[in-house]
Image (cartoon, rainbow, N blue to C red):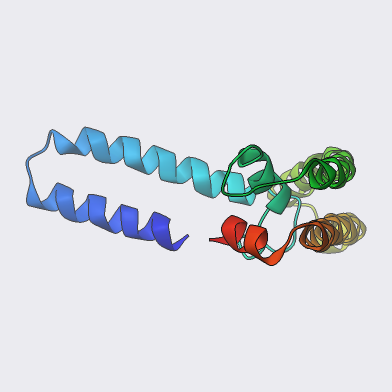
Length: 154
């Protein structure tokens, strides 16, 4: 989020200091910032931007000579990722439609009391997804050594 704000401030400063053709570049930057922010908003988790998605980072660095994963680690990490992604995918299929339903009903003027059960269900689903994420981090950290973990969290 800080990087996004810094980028936005830098782009704005640059626009103000130059002529109008740069405005088109600023629009491109703003669209990419909006995509990043939207992606964070489309999250099944309760805690946003404060915990890493370690298995995704592992996947991106799978064959990195700096990470030096062993075959045994790779096998364990694949199991953690598969378990995590299976659970999260299932939860997303419940969370996202329910979010849309609550938002639509809210904007249509439904009374808050009539939405309470759905909001409570939504909070339970998001809490469950967050616990899956926490367990994923815990299990991944158990598999990696200190050097590998430091490399991934840099």
